[in-house]
Length: 173
Image (tube, rainbow, N blue to C red; front, side):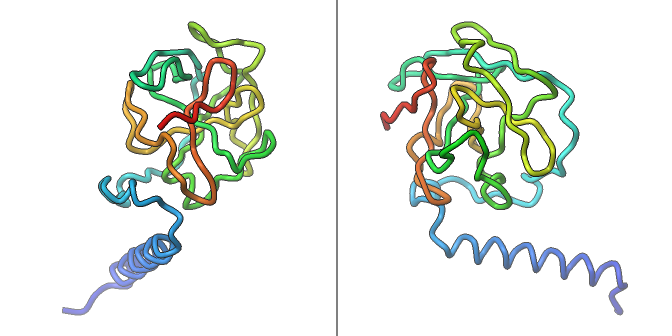
């Protein structure tokens, strides 16, 4: 059976993506603690779509971490220690594991969050990423509401921490 051009192209794209993931994984950027988590599949990385909602950032108590920032559904948000200013340094492969918290406009302060510490920064693709106390905020790809599996991970060149209501990193592991 002769493969069509579309089939050969699809196989080539899948092969290139798999090779890129393999090369990036060999770089040692993901911590050993993350290796126990299932590897992301291509289906885990949907195509970006326009953000049509306004993000809400609130405070929620999570066992052993205390009060931390979460989104409107209770999912923890993180800061990346490598972000030394308000601009994100997490792009390409990094943002597949640490998706930015995006918003369609100025974010809202939920219960316990300080509206004066909320803001946005513009990402290279033009989307608005939520900031808190000047830190761009991110999710960890395996978290669900009430879970903080990304806490203390050393990945993509630095550490990832949940955020306190004052905007400081919570460094408890």
